Amino acid sequence: MSIFLEKKVLKLLFLGFSSGLPILLVFSTLSVWLHKAGLDRSTVTLFSWAGFAYAFKYLWSPIVDNFNIPVFKKLGHRRSWLLFSQIMILFSLVATGITDPSKNVFLTAITIVFLAIFSATQDIVIDAYRIESAPQNMQGPLSSMYIAGYRVAMLVGGAGSLWLASYLGVEIYKQSVWMIVYIFMGLLMFIGILTTLFSEEPNVKRNSFSKSKQHIKFLFVILLAIISFIFLYSQIENPYNSQEMLKGFLFAALRILLCFFLMFVIIIIFIKLKFLSKEKIKKIYLNPIINFLKRYGKFAISILVLIGLYRIADVVMGVMANIFYLEKGFDVKEIATYSKFFGVFATIIGGFLGGFFSLRFGTMKALFLGALVASLSNLLFAWLAINEPNISFLIIVITADNISSGFAGAAFVVYLSGLTSIKFTATQYALFSSLMLFIPKFIAGYAGSWVNSIGYANFFCLTALLGLPVLLLIIWLAKVAPVKN
Image (cartoon, rainbow, N blue to C red; front, side):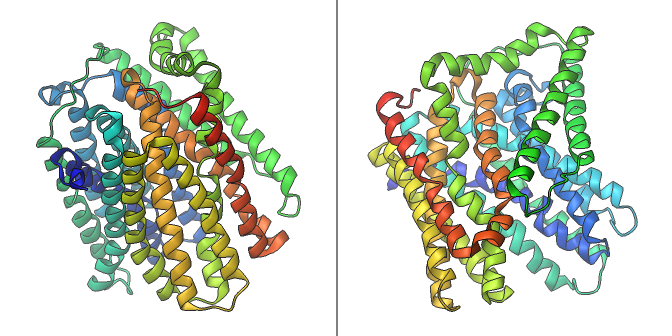
């Protein structure tokens, strides 16, 4: 266990903190602020679109892999990008804090979008830095420490920011209260900044594009494509209600495919106009995918299916958890205490167990056990659903669920790290992590309709069964396609 106290591993604790701090300030804490500022519900929910930055980070991950930042060149490629993103997160948090959504919500929206973009960029860099800093057998402890720091930061950015706001007097709306909260959270980014400055650059050779004009053109087209996706998606309404679940599901899938097709068309148009270089687009987007397909051959598609389905059991169940707690009769204070506070520490424990198990018994065994306990923990929710509300039962279920989630998360990060080629670290890992949540999140959008149709107990049993194909796929891949470094 002394490996968790090594300098290289401990640094991931602080980088994990830096990575996890902004995310709830973009979502849950912000929604409370906007509500207190008097904004209507529909306006508040529109801010969730800032989360598209995390979903689309693969699109600008090649910039992180291939383009240099001249200002911080002496720090090295990875550390320069890391420092740049952390400084921009700090500035974005401060800028958000000095806005007043009750007077100019558009300005607040702009700063939040920048915060989400730079937060997603930092995630890209830290994932690449972690993979390049140590061999595969060290990725378990590194991932565990990263997840621990990430979860502590979520506790600080979520519950901590709201506790601070409450202490300062949040019941009567005052912009100055939220300004202090966001500026204080911004100052905590110095934890990540100092860690970056005192870290070493990974010893990896890479070829970078040097023409800054090409950087700007590339970034412009990518941003235009993302904005077009969001605009088209928002303009197409699903005509089917919750009773027509299958039709609604298929329509939603078609809508997303249409939006991706629009993005593809925009990029092709700019290539045809010779605004972008076809060779460079191939090099930064297609080559990482071709590299992965060549390395794993006929098993590549099966591996991608595993990546897309691995977290399906706990993600689909997780979207209904808080609603289930409330409808079961537990009050908000109990949910906050046991789910949001103690649940964080249970997740950290699970993360350490997952990392240690990966180190001791191997990646594929840890991956299988993680998928198994994540699925089985859903059956505990079914057990809770058929029993009378009991705080002891709630504690047992939440603790088991968070430990299993932390274990599965750590094991999966180790697996993805092993799949990633050192030649395309940021781009490939960003692709994997985006794919990891895309299908589960998409299916989770229909979880409420499932509960309406079959009830909570059957719903939780169904989500547990969703993990069965994953287990079979892991057993098969462990024999035919073990992780290659």
